[in-house]
Length: 325
Image (cartoon, rainbow, N blue to C red; front, side, top):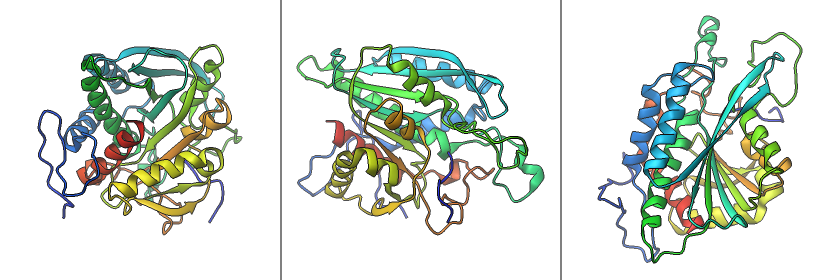
């Protein structure tokens, strides 16, 4: 991810049990979420190398996600096709969809992140380094890691035959970060970012599922992460922004979930809102003190495991599970 449309230690010690619950003296019921588990899911992706579409690492990551989700008890399907990239070439797209809970196709909840990584470090100050792919520990793997741990918890709930679970779909979008690089001098085209979610939204009209709302996670692992109320999220899904930020406040995570409203960001949620017409909220790290609006490591070689903190993963994971419980 992406671009703006307008210019412009340890908090706690986690002790993971089978359910990885976090103890607290407050009366708020905390969902079971294990940040150490999410961290491992992120590290496993990064260890494969940059997950650039069309590469061996990308294929290995897709296979890993499918196997892991199936092992957790999900019904998994793939969407395959092609989209046109910024140069007008066909780009293979491979979305991964995991179904949990009720088999009712109506009024489901959508959770999503992208699993591909940027083919270029086009925000590097050293021009020669701009052509290197990135690890994508935060921009890509962090959202996937949190949702894999959410999936693990949903799988455990699913094993309880007395539990009544809502229908929840987790989608890992492909080709989100294949948008036009900053060094490209050719003709500029629109809608070159978030190709996987555009593909998914276009196919939704042929499917029977309907969704109450969606949440997209992007860059949700940094120790200094701040998630503002993003403009498009407010415009299309204000009530769900309120619900998510209220849950964060109840859980004591207001330091991560800021009340500041920020510029519009073209992320997967934009096409879920505008093409699929599903109210969708983007939980994304934004840095208003940066000229680019994103953290210093964004689209550089520094997007690595050093910028992943379990405290942030814990906050995001608990908030997501609290909202969908």
